[in-house]
Length: 279
Image (cartoon, rainbow, N blue to C red):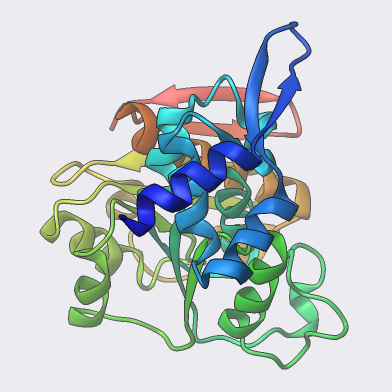
């Protein structure tokens, strides 16, 4: 008898019924059951959750994603691969949200260490993490947040061909870099690999977020090089978290509905203004 068939049958038997706020019911697989199956079968959490979704059984951890994210779309998320470059202010929040959404494989790259000036805004920057590699800290955090997903930490800076080596194996790239120095390198790698890139930048209470499709113009091409506005205006936590949330939402739209935004959103939290601009 096929092992997958046996597992699917066992999952059906172990599923429970949950009544949703709207009165409808769905079959769910509790987090405890996923863990028990994993230990008993030696099967990764993610494969158990995929098998459940194939049987129209929703893993309990994703109940609050449903029904805006259907079981089919949740399965697509678990099968997706996202490359996040930069694990500081933007990147720390982005990987947190992608993991909670259920993106199956996240590759996170950053060669930097946490330092005291990161404490004002970076999710993984704590007094305890000072001096630690950002990629290593992210690995530990992701295991706690969602052990069902695969997080691959790259603890060195990537340039040129190294970016392409990672970019060609993913569905979406997320630009969470600071400053201007390497953004164009990443955009070129995304274009060469024909992968959409979600980009963002923050300075003071302002920022921008958008998806750059292969061959399209990105903000980094228009901003030039040299000093970044964030060095002068600073990067408060609120501005960073807003931009990162919109980046995570762009990834969700691309993976689940193939509908990235076709413009760049510029925002200013001081006067609560938001403006879409087509480049």
